Image (tube, rainbow over all chains, first blue to last red; front, side):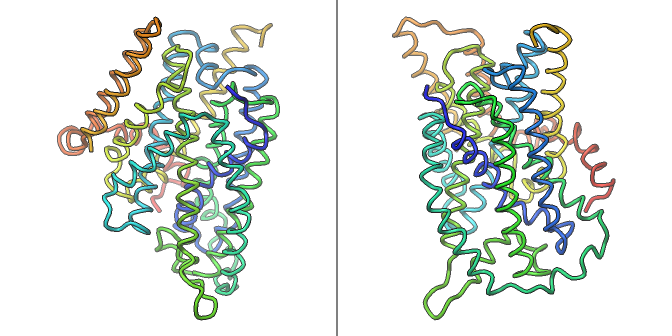
Length: 360
Length: 80
Protein backbone atom coordinates (compact mmCIF):
# COMPACT_ATOMS: atom_id res chain seq x y z
CA UNK A 1 0.00 0.00 0.00
CA UNK A 2 1.43 3.36 -1.06
CA UNK A 3 1.11 6.10 1.61
CA UNK A 4 -0.64 9.34 0.73
CA UNK A 5 1.10 12.68 1.01
CA UNK A 6 0.03 15.63 3.15
CA UNK A 7 -1.03 17.60 0.08
CA UNK A 8 -3.30 14.73 -1.01
CA UNK A 9 -4.81 14.48 2.48
CA UNK A 10 -5.64 18.19 2.45
CA UNK A 11 -7.19 17.96 -1.01
CA UNK A 12 -9.28 14.89 -0.21
CA UNK A 13 -10.53 16.48 3.02
CA UNK A 14 -11.38 19.77 1.34
CA UNK A 15 -13.42 18.15 -1.43
CA UNK A 16 -14.93 15.66 1.01
CA UNK A 17 -16.35 18.41 3.19
CA UNK A 18 -17.33 20.68 0.31
CA UNK A 19 -18.86 17.82 -1.73
CA UNK A 20 -22.30 18.08 -0.21
CA UNK A 21 -21.28 21.28 1.55
CA UNK A 22 -21.61 23.56 -1.45
CA UNK A 23 -24.75 21.71 -2.46
CA UNK A 24 -26.84 21.69 0.70
CA UNK A 25 -25.03 23.80 3.30
CA UNK A 26 -26.21 27.19 1.93
CA UNK A 27 -29.85 26.06 1.90
CA UNK A 28 -29.73 24.59 5.43
CA UNK A 29 -28.03 27.74 6.72
CA UNK A 30 -30.51 29.99 4.94
CA UNK A 31 -33.42 28.48 6.87
CA UNK A 32 -32.31 30.34 9.98
CA UNK A 33 -30.47 33.49 8.90
CA UNK A 34 -30.76 34.23 5.17
CA UNK A 35 -29.21 37.68 5.60
CA UNK A 36 -26.48 36.93 8.11
CA UNK A 37 -25.54 33.39 7.20
CA UNK A 38 -22.17 34.50 5.83
CA UNK A 39 -21.09 34.77 9.49
CA UNK A 40 -22.13 31.17 10.10
CA UNK A 41 -19.43 29.93 7.72
CA UNK A 42 -17.05 30.34 10.67
CA UNK A 43 -18.83 27.32 12.18
CA UNK A 44 -17.08 25.13 9.61
CA UNK A 45 -13.69 26.43 10.77
CA UNK A 46 -14.59 25.81 14.42
CA UNK A 47 -15.73 22.29 13.55
CA UNK A 48 -12.44 21.76 11.71
CA UNK A 49 -10.53 23.00 14.76
CA UNK A 50 -12.39 20.52 17.01
CA UNK A 51 -11.61 17.72 14.52
CA UNK A 52 -7.99 18.83 14.50
CA UNK A 53 -7.90 18.62 18.32
CA UNK A 54 -9.29 15.07 18.24
CA UNK A 55 -6.74 14.17 15.54
CA UNK A 56 -3.92 15.65 17.67
CA UNK A 57 -4.81 13.37 20.55
CA UNK A 58 -5.27 10.40 18.21
CA UNK A 59 -1.90 10.64 16.44
CA UNK A 60 -0.10 11.13 19.76
CA UNK A 61 -1.63 7.98 21.25
CA UNK A 62 -2.19 5.83 18.14
CA UNK A 63 0.19 7.04 15.41
CA UNK A 64 -0.31 3.92 13.25
CA UNK A 65 -3.93 2.97 13.93
CA UNK A 66 -7.25 3.95 12.46
CA UNK A 67 -10.04 5.26 14.71
CA UNK A 68 -11.84 1.90 14.80
CA UNK A 69 -8.60 0.06 15.62
CA UNK A 70 -7.83 2.64 18.31
CA UNK A 71 -11.27 2.17 19.91
CA UNK A 72 -10.71 -1.58 20.08
CA UNK A 73 -7.25 -1.14 21.60
CA UNK A 74 -8.36 1.46 24.13
CA UNK A 75 -11.66 0.00 25.27
CA UNK A 76 -10.86 -3.71 25.08
CA UNK A 77 -12.33 -6.51 22.94
CA UNK A 78 -16.00 -6.14 23.95
CA UNK A 79 -16.60 -2.46 24.59
CA UNK A 80 -14.04 -1.58 21.90
CA UNK A 81 -15.71 -3.74 19.25
CA UNK A 82 -19.07 -2.25 20.20
CA UNK A 83 -17.68 1.29 19.88
CA UNK A 84 -16.04 0.43 16.54
CA UNK A 85 -19.35 -1.03 15.31
CA UNK A 86 -21.07 2.20 16.37
CA UNK A 87 -18.59 4.21 14.28
CA UNK A 88 -19.07 1.86 11.30
CA UNK A 89 -22.86 2.21 11.51
CA UNK A 90 -22.47 5.99 11.61
CA UNK A 91 -20.24 5.87 8.53
CA UNK A 92 -22.78 3.65 6.75
CA UNK A 93 -25.59 6.12 7.49
CA UNK A 94 -23.43 9.11 6.47
CA UNK A 95 -22.45 7.42 3.18
CA UNK A 96 -26.07 6.55 2.45
CA UNK A 97 -27.02 10.19 3.09
CA UNK A 98 -24.42 11.37 0.57
CA UNK A 99 -25.63 8.79 -1.98
CA UNK A 100 -29.22 10.02 -1.57
CA UNK A 101 -28.17 13.67 -1.93
CA UNK A 102 -26.24 12.77 -5.06
CA UNK A 103 -29.14 11.00 -6.76
CA UNK A 104 -31.60 13.75 -5.78
CA UNK A 105 -29.28 16.38 -7.25
CA UNK A 106 -28.51 14.61 -10.54
CA UNK A 107 -32.11 13.67 -11.26
CA UNK A 108 -33.37 17.15 -10.40
CA UNK A 109 -30.72 19.04 -12.34
CA UNK A 110 -29.39 16.91 -15.17
CA UNK A 111 -31.24 13.62 -15.65
CA UNK A 112 -34.96 14.19 -14.99
CA UNK A 113 -36.05 11.09 -16.93
CA UNK A 114 -33.59 8.72 -15.28
CA UNK A 115 -34.63 6.69 -12.25
CA UNK A 116 -32.87 7.89 -9.12
CA UNK A 117 -31.52 4.46 -8.25
CA UNK A 118 -29.83 4.21 -11.66
CA UNK A 119 -28.06 7.54 -11.15
CA UNK A 120 -27.07 6.47 -7.63
CA UNK A 121 -25.82 3.11 -8.94
CA UNK A 122 -23.51 4.88 -11.40
CA UNK A 123 -22.12 7.15 -8.68
CA UNK A 124 -21.77 4.40 -6.09
CA UNK A 125 -20.12 2.13 -8.67
CA UNK A 126 -17.58 4.81 -9.63
CA UNK A 127 -16.89 5.64 -6.00
CA UNK A 128 -16.49 1.95 -5.15
CA UNK A 129 -14.04 1.53 -8.03
CA UNK A 130 -11.99 4.47 -6.71
CA UNK A 131 -12.07 2.99 -3.20
CA UNK A 132 -11.09 -0.39 -4.63
CA UNK A 133 -8.03 1.15 -6.30
CA UNK A 134 -6.93 2.63 -2.98
CA UNK A 135 -6.57 5.89 -1.12
CA UNK A 136 -3.46 7.01 -3.01
CA UNK A 137 -5.35 6.76 -6.34
CA UNK A 138 -8.12 8.86 -4.81
CA UNK A 139 -5.44 11.36 -3.84
CA UNK A 140 -4.08 11.44 -7.38
CA UNK A 141 -7.58 11.95 -8.82
CA UNK A 142 -7.90 14.93 -6.47
CA UNK A 143 -4.56 16.31 -7.65
CA UNK A 144 -5.70 15.96 -11.25
CA UNK A 145 -8.90 17.89 -10.54
CA UNK A 146 -7.25 20.84 -8.78
CA UNK A 147 -6.23 22.78 -11.96
CA UNK A 148 -9.74 22.32 -13.42
CA UNK A 149 -11.37 23.68 -10.27
CA UNK A 150 -8.80 26.49 -10.08
CA UNK A 151 -10.12 27.67 -13.45
CA UNK A 152 -13.84 26.88 -13.10
CA UNK A 153 -14.40 28.22 -9.58
CA UNK A 154 -12.97 31.75 -10.10
CA UNK A 155 -14.71 32.01 -13.50
CA UNK A 156 -18.12 31.21 -11.98
CA UNK A 157 -17.40 33.42 -8.96
CA UNK A 158 -16.42 36.53 -10.91
CA UNK A 159 -19.16 36.13 -13.53
CA UNK A 160 -21.78 35.83 -10.79
CA UNK A 161 -20.62 39.13 -9.30
CA UNK A 162 -22.59 40.76 -12.15
CA UNK A 163 -25.77 39.69 -10.31
CA UNK A 164 -24.47 40.89 -6.96
CA UNK A 165 -26.23 43.49 -4.84
CA UNK A 166 -25.39 44.71 -1.32
CA UNK A 167 -28.96 45.39 -0.22
CA UNK A 168 -29.82 41.79 0.86
CA UNK A 169 -27.06 42.04 3.52
CA UNK A 170 -28.72 44.97 5.28
CA UNK A 171 -29.55 45.42 8.09
CA UNK A 172 -26.76 43.34 9.60
CA UNK A 173 -27.75 41.23 12.62
CA UNK A 174 -31.33 42.51 12.49
CA UNK A 175 -32.54 39.47 14.49
CA UNK A 176 -29.49 39.24 16.75
CA UNK A 177 -26.98 36.42 17.16
CA UNK A 178 -29.41 33.55 17.85
CA UNK A 179 -30.30 32.90 14.17
CA UNK A 180 -26.58 33.07 13.30
CA UNK A 181 -25.83 30.43 15.96
CA UNK A 182 -28.68 28.22 14.72
CA UNK A 183 -27.48 28.62 11.18
CA UNK A 184 -23.93 27.61 12.15
CA UNK A 185 -24.95 24.35 13.86
CA UNK A 186 -24.92 22.26 10.66
CA UNK A 187 -21.54 23.59 9.38
CA UNK A 188 -20.01 23.18 12.83
CA UNK A 189 -21.32 19.81 13.98
CA UNK A 190 -22.05 18.01 10.70
CA UNK A 191 -19.61 19.20 8.04
CA UNK A 192 -16.90 20.42 10.42
CA UNK A 193 -16.72 17.06 12.16
CA UNK A 194 -16.46 15.22 8.83
CA UNK A 195 -12.75 16.09 8.97
CA UNK A 196 -12.36 13.35 11.58
CA UNK A 197 -12.89 10.92 8.71
CA UNK A 198 -9.12 11.22 8.18
CA UNK A 199 -8.60 9.28 11.42
CA UNK A 200 -9.68 6.17 9.52
CA UNK A 201 -6.86 6.77 7.02
CA UNK A 202 -4.05 7.14 9.59
CA UNK A 203 -2.35 3.80 8.66
CA UNK A 204 -2.12 5.02 5.03
CA UNK A 205 -0.68 8.47 5.77
CA UNK A 206 2.89 9.39 4.92
CA UNK A 207 3.17 11.75 7.91
CA UNK A 208 0.42 10.92 10.43
CA UNK A 209 1.87 13.29 13.04
CA UNK A 210 1.09 16.24 10.78
CA UNK A 211 -2.58 15.28 10.41
CA UNK A 212 -3.92 17.92 12.87
CA UNK A 213 -2.21 20.70 10.88
CA UNK A 214 -3.47 19.22 7.60
CA UNK A 215 -7.02 19.18 8.94
CA UNK A 216 -6.71 22.82 10.01
CA UNK A 217 -5.43 23.87 6.57
CA UNK A 218 -8.21 21.91 4.84
CA UNK A 219 -10.76 23.53 7.20
CA UNK A 220 -9.42 26.98 6.35
CA UNK A 221 -9.58 26.29 2.59
CA UNK A 222 -13.11 24.84 2.87
CA UNK A 223 -14.33 27.79 4.95
CA UNK A 224 -12.87 30.25 2.47
CA UNK A 225 -14.55 28.53 -0.51
CA UNK A 226 -17.84 28.12 1.32
CA UNK A 227 -17.82 31.77 2.40
CA UNK A 228 -17.29 32.81 -1.24
CA UNK A 229 -20.25 30.73 -2.41
CA UNK A 230 -22.49 31.91 0.45
CA UNK A 231 -21.51 35.54 -0.05
CA UNK A 232 -22.38 35.47 -3.75
CA UNK A 233 -25.59 33.51 -3.12
CA UNK A 234 -26.86 36.11 -0.62
CA UNK A 235 -25.94 39.02 -2.87
CA UNK A 236 -27.45 37.47 -6.02
CA UNK A 237 -30.58 35.80 -4.65
CA UNK A 238 -31.51 37.86 -1.59
CA UNK A 239 -34.69 36.76 0.19
CA UNK A 240 -35.40 33.96 -2.30
CA UNK A 241 -32.45 32.07 -0.82
CA UNK A 242 -34.46 30.41 1.95
CA UNK A 243 -36.89 28.82 -0.53
CA UNK A 244 -34.30 27.17 -2.77
CA UNK A 245 -32.79 23.70 -2.43
CA UNK A 246 -29.65 24.48 -4.44
CA UNK A 247 -28.96 28.25 -4.20
CA UNK A 248 -25.48 28.14 -5.79
CA UNK A 249 -26.93 26.31 -8.79
CA UNK A 250 -29.53 29.05 -9.27
CA UNK A 251 -26.78 31.68 -9.20
CA UNK A 252 -24.79 29.80 -11.85
CA UNK A 253 -27.97 29.36 -13.93
CA UNK A 254 -28.67 33.10 -13.89
CA UNK A 255 -25.24 34.04 -15.29
CA UNK A 256 -25.42 35.53 -18.79
CA UNK A 257 -22.60 37.14 -20.72
CA UNK A 258 -23.49 38.71 -24.06
CA UNK A 259 -25.75 36.71 -26.37
CA UNK A 260 -24.03 33.38 -26.36
CA UNK A 261 -22.59 32.60 -22.93
CA UNK A 262 -25.27 31.23 -20.62
CA UNK A 263 -26.37 28.06 -18.84
CA UNK A 264 -23.12 27.84 -16.91
CA UNK A 265 -25.00 25.70 -14.40
CA UNK A 266 -23.83 22.77 -16.54
CA UNK A 267 -20.27 23.56 -15.48
CA UNK A 268 -21.38 23.82 -11.86
CA UNK A 269 -23.35 20.57 -12.12
CA UNK A 270 -20.35 18.70 -13.53
CA UNK A 271 -18.14 20.03 -10.74
CA UNK A 272 -20.62 19.07 -8.03
CA UNK A 273 -21.12 15.57 -9.46
CA UNK A 274 -17.34 15.06 -9.57
CA UNK A 275 -16.68 16.12 -6.01
CA UNK A 276 -19.71 14.20 -4.75
CA UNK A 277 -18.23 11.03 -6.25
CA UNK A 278 -14.92 11.87 -4.55
CA UNK A 279 -16.76 12.39 -1.29
CA UNK A 280 -18.55 9.06 -1.67
CA UNK A 281 -15.22 7.34 -2.43
CA UNK A 282 -13.49 8.84 0.60
CA UNK A 283 -16.34 7.77 2.89
CA UNK A 284 -16.25 4.35 1.25
CA UNK A 285 -12.52 3.95 2.05
CA UNK A 286 -13.14 4.96 5.67
CA UNK A 287 -16.07 2.55 5.86
CA UNK A 288 -14.17 -0.40 4.43
CA UNK A 289 -11.30 0.29 6.84
CA UNK A 290 -13.93 0.13 9.60
CA UNK A 291 -15.19 -3.23 8.34
CA UNK A 292 -11.62 -4.53 8.14
CA UNK A 293 -11.01 -3.47 11.70
CA UNK A 294 -14.28 -4.99 12.93
CA UNK A 295 -13.64 -8.32 11.22
CA UNK A 296 -9.93 -8.54 12.11
CA UNK A 297 -8.91 -9.21 8.54
CA UNK A 298 -5.82 -7.96 6.74
CA UNK A 299 -7.32 -6.33 3.70
CA UNK A 300 -9.97 -3.60 3.54
CA UNK A 301 -10.41 -3.93 -0.23
CA UNK A 302 -12.60 -7.03 -0.03
CA UNK A 303 -15.36 -5.03 1.68
CA UNK A 304 -15.57 -2.36 -1.00
CA UNK A 305 -18.12 -3.85 -3.40
CA UNK A 306 -20.51 -5.45 -0.86
CA UNK A 307 -20.56 -2.29 1.25
CA UNK A 308 -21.16 -0.21 -1.90
CA UNK A 309 -24.18 -2.39 -2.79
CA UNK A 310 -25.39 -2.13 0.78
CA UNK A 311 -25.04 1.65 0.96
CA UNK A 312 -26.68 2.06 -2.43
CA UNK A 313 -29.83 0.19 -1.38
CA UNK A 314 -29.75 1.67 2.13
CA UNK A 315 -29.82 5.22 0.79
CA UNK A 316 -33.37 4.54 -0.49
CA UNK A 317 -34.39 2.63 2.58
CA UNK A 318 -33.39 5.46 4.89
CA UNK A 319 -34.76 8.42 2.96
CA UNK A 320 -37.89 8.59 0.85
CA UNK A 321 -36.98 12.01 -0.56
CA UNK A 322 -34.62 14.95 -0.22
CA UNK A 323 -36.80 16.57 2.45
CA UNK A 324 -36.12 13.64 4.78
CA UNK A 325 -32.38 14.01 4.15
CA UNK A 326 -32.58 17.70 5.08
CA UNK A 327 -34.60 16.90 8.22
CA UNK A 328 -32.09 14.32 9.41
CA UNK A 329 -29.17 16.65 8.61
CA UNK A 330 -30.76 19.44 10.64
CA UNK A 331 -32.28 17.60 13.59
CA UNK A 332 -30.33 14.38 14.15
CA UNK A 333 -26.85 14.48 12.65
CA UNK A 334 -25.39 17.38 14.74
CA UNK A 335 -25.45 15.53 18.07
CA UNK A 336 -25.04 12.11 16.41
CA UNK A 337 -21.78 13.23 14.80
CA UNK A 338 -20.63 15.08 17.93
CA UNK A 339 -21.16 11.92 19.96
CA UNK A 340 -19.58 9.56 17.41
CA UNK A 341 -16.62 11.59 16.20
CA UNK A 342 -15.77 13.64 19.29
CA UNK A 343 -17.14 12.19 22.54
CA UNK A 344 -16.54 8.52 21.68
CA UNK A 345 -12.87 8.98 20.60
CA UNK A 346 -12.17 11.30 23.56
CA UNK A 347 -13.59 8.76 26.03
CA UNK A 348 -11.48 6.04 24.36
CA UNK A 349 -8.31 8.15 24.69
CA UNK A 350 -9.15 8.82 28.33
CA UNK A 351 -9.72 5.10 28.92
CA UNK A 352 -6.37 4.37 27.25
CA UNK A 353 -4.67 6.88 29.52
CA UNK A 354 -6.25 5.31 32.61
CA UNK A 355 -5.66 1.71 31.56
CA UNK A 356 -2.10 2.08 30.30
CA UNK A 357 -0.70 5.24 31.90
CA UNK A 358 2.92 4.47 30.94
CA UNK A 359 2.50 3.49 27.31
CA UNK A 360 0.04 6.24 26.28
CA UNK B 1 -33.16 -2.52 -7.27
CA UNK B 2 -33.14 -4.35 -3.96
CA UNK B 3 -32.62 -7.68 -5.72
CA UNK B 4 -29.66 -6.28 -7.62
CA UNK B 5 -28.18 -5.09 -4.32
CA UNK B 6 -28.68 -8.47 -2.66
CA UNK B 7 -27.23 -10.22 -5.72
CA UNK B 8 -24.26 -7.81 -5.68
CA UNK B 9 -23.51 -8.47 -2.02
CA UNK B 10 -23.91 -12.23 -2.44
CA UNK B 11 -21.92 -12.58 -5.66
CA UNK B 12 -19.01 -10.41 -4.50
CA UNK B 13 -18.98 -12.28 -1.16
CA UNK B 14 -19.03 -15.66 -2.87
CA UNK B 15 -16.25 -14.61 -5.23
CA UNK B 16 -14.11 -13.41 -2.35
CA UNK B 17 -14.76 -16.62 -0.43
CA UNK B 18 -13.77 -18.68 -3.47
CA UNK B 19 -10.59 -16.62 -3.97
CA UNK B 20 -9.57 -16.96 -0.33
CA UNK B 21 -10.26 -20.71 -0.25
CA UNK B 22 -8.30 -21.18 -3.45
CA UNK B 23 -5.25 -19.43 -2.06
CA UNK B 24 -5.41 -21.57 1.07
CA UNK B 25 -6.51 -18.67 3.28
CA UNK B 26 -8.87 -18.92 6.20
CA UNK B 27 -12.08 -17.02 6.78
CA UNK B 28 -12.85 -15.70 10.25
CA UNK B 29 -16.31 -16.21 11.71
CA UNK B 30 -16.67 -12.46 12.14
CA UNK B 31 -16.05 -11.99 8.44
CA UNK B 32 -18.88 -14.35 7.54
CA UNK B 33 -21.13 -12.66 10.11
CA UNK B 34 -20.29 -9.33 8.48
CA UNK B 35 -21.29 -10.67 5.06
CA UNK B 36 -24.56 -11.98 6.44
CA UNK B 37 -25.26 -8.65 8.11
CA UNK B 38 -24.66 -6.80 4.87
CA UNK B 39 -26.95 -9.19 2.98
CA UNK B 40 -29.65 -8.91 5.65
CA UNK B 41 -29.26 -5.13 5.63
CA UNK B 42 -29.89 -5.18 1.90
CA UNK B 43 -33.03 -7.27 2.48
CA UNK B 44 -34.38 -4.84 5.05
CA UNK B 45 -33.63 -2.03 2.66
CA UNK B 46 -36.75 -3.00 0.77
CA UNK B 47 -38.16 -0.05 2.68
CA UNK B 48 -41.79 -1.02 2.86
CA UNK B 49 -41.10 -3.25 5.87
CA UNK B 50 -39.79 -0.41 7.94
CA UNK B 51 -41.77 2.50 6.61
CA UNK B 52 -45.22 0.97 6.68
CA UNK B 53 -45.29 -2.12 8.88
CA UNK B 54 -42.73 -1.75 11.59
CA UNK B 55 -41.34 1.78 12.11
CA UNK B 56 -39.03 0.64 14.91
CA UNK B 57 -37.00 -1.27 12.29
CA UNK B 58 -36.01 2.00 10.72
CA UNK B 59 -32.57 3.15 12.02
CA UNK B 60 -33.56 6.81 11.84
CA UNK B 61 -36.42 6.10 14.26
CA UNK B 62 -33.83 5.18 16.89
CA UNK B 63 -31.42 7.92 15.95
CA UNK B 64 -34.16 10.49 16.30
CA UNK B 65 -35.15 9.02 19.67
CA UNK B 66 -31.53 9.13 20.87
CA UNK B 67 -30.30 12.42 19.43
CA UNK B 68 -33.36 14.40 18.36
CA UNK B 69 -33.98 16.02 21.75
CA UNK B 70 -30.38 17.09 22.30
CA UNK B 71 -30.20 18.58 18.79
CA UNK B 72 -33.40 20.53 19.45
CA UNK B 73 -31.79 21.80 22.64
CA UNK B 74 -28.92 23.14 20.52
CA UNK B 75 -31.43 25.10 18.46
CA UNK B 76 -32.84 26.55 21.66
CA UNK B 77 -35.78 24.17 21.86
CA UNK B 78 -37.59 25.57 18.84
CA UNK B 79 -38.27 23.93 15.51
CA UNK B 80 -37.22 26.45 12.84
